[in-house]
Length: 580
Ligand SMILES: Cc1cc2nc3c(=O)[nH]c(=O)nc-3n(C[C@H](O)[C@H](O)[C@H](O)COP(=O)(O)OP(=O)(O)OC[C@H]3O[C@@H](n4cnc5c(N)ncnc54)[C@H](O)[C@@H]3O)c2cc1C
Image (tube, rainbow, N blue to C red; front, side, top):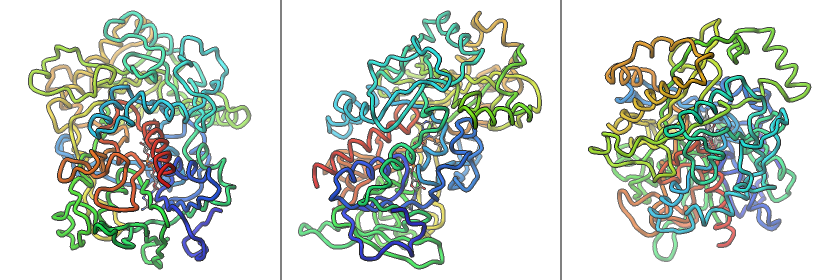
């Protein structure tokens, strides 16, 4: 049953599990736990249940969703590596969480990413090979919206079938597609073609897989939740913020039991508490999960006492270790009048395209991010490796990512009202910078302090710079010669390393992949740097409390982060079920 506010939740119901947050992590757990009709689950979501909103459904409307009713409206602290700038830090505030507002890239990450998780946790179950059943269980490949022949664009043998998350190749082909692929074939030593970056080896340029199906966004709400809404053992409470987890007892060994949650529908509204007979599962995402833990007395004791919060369990790693992917863009004018810029600059065309989407779910509006993605490594002899260790997980993980885009995009400049462009996103995908989340106040309705600390290491700025230079080399391929006119300002003026660095620091934005703020580590090891969670995702030093979301990653995968969250949550659900 779906309840719209805390007051309406029946008091008499007893729950086995209470899940906090209905995003990528929480929906998977809610779905899998309620497969057993005897398991009663309550999912509490702070945002609304309006995941059928048109701006969410139409894939290419994704950029409209920031700073709306579907956004938490976070802003970071000033970041030293970004010339002191604060940036908008988007997170989904609706059932589906950030999967309802993201740009839909479908990326599992690499074999080395998961093997590193297994290594740092000492838990072989997190390795790429061990996770295969979960990796395949999630997904279901479907035809692209335009039903084009996808031979040569995907390796279906590495994919699963019949899972809840439909994904597809680009639903509308673009004139730049063959130029991207052509440049990769031409410059294949540096930019090799990769038939499927989801095979475990991500490296190269390949066709983008997206969480879209039949021209429509696929998110955690419509894939994992909508099909099971009618289960009588699943209650969902929306528009309700969990303000903290509550200690409900003490285990014989002295460990505190946290099977309670406190929640409220508004900051001045009544506070309610409920407890679960088995577990409370925090899936509030990488910003709110550490905030909830700290507000509940679980975190670094010196930080908690500075705000007058009584420490119940001293877990120094809560809120530390934040990792994210910075992005930078570079644009060119093009010889064509047929680019996706027209959707922005021509209102008549935009109206026609919406009509086309409404009637047939086809056309330019079905598109997610660029139709291809590139996952690339610095050369082994790059000078930076003389002074810095390689932060990537291994040879199947990229250092940086390309998103080639058939239009103008910038996060620092106004969009031109006319003209046709091509843009390359260069994203740092194996960063060594680390940020943190701390409390600003003890008010759960106040935002915590968010310090991503992007580009705070030599490796990170070096790699961003090299990624811009690599983008220029890629665009100098013959296959672009009849398309590209010239690089636009201000990047065209940034030629020396110092100039490129200044451009990056003054314009760099985020791919919105905040993760790793309650990282799992070795089970039983304690103290700073040992992780906030055991390798089964239970919170260190507690009973009855687990974290299942992107906070739990020890390292950010060299990938977009929704699928790694689904993968983590699928295994978590199995671990929970087997212990119950
Ligand atoms: C703009 C944007 C673009 C992105 N693009 C991509 C992409 O193209 N591909 C990709 O793979 N990934 C992308 N991501 C990242 C991806 O969506 C996230 O990594 C993923 O959704 C994380 O899952 P999660 O469960 O940790 O958190 P979320 O999915 O954010 O879910 C957390 C949920 O908890 C709720 N919540 C928080 N606090 C509370 C509380 N106190 N009480 C109750 N509920 C609470 C939130 O409202 C939210 O619904 C993008 C993200 C954004 C924001």
